[in-house]
Image 1 (cartoon, rainbow, N blue to C red):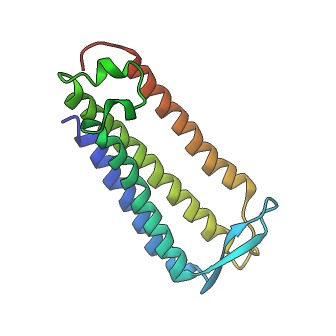
Image 2: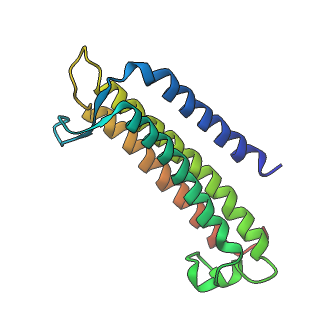
Length: 169
């Protein structure tokens, strides 16, 4: 049951991402701005298909990398793991349970990454709106990036807080 919530949440996050990519595809021009300077003016372009392929690839590979790296704690050398009270948590009698706990944390972080990439995709779609001119909203980007950074900070503090305690899993 401990696995249900993060896996379900990740499936929902991916469903939101893919639904938005599919529904926004026709709103994108054939050549769109994908990189912007600090004033929000475009300085890099991609084809629509290239951008969609990049978004899908990044949204698939980044969370998979996070989950993959965090799931390796069960078999990589202990010295490669940076964790509070590492020797306690990775002792042979606790290593499997610790690895499972880290994997659950990784699944939650993967959810945040998928939502962040969805937000960036949304920002690029909005920036390429022909009615308002091609321009990235600085306030929107601060919101998307700031929310992700805040969530990451909370996630890191929860992981550190959990592993600072040396009690039973």
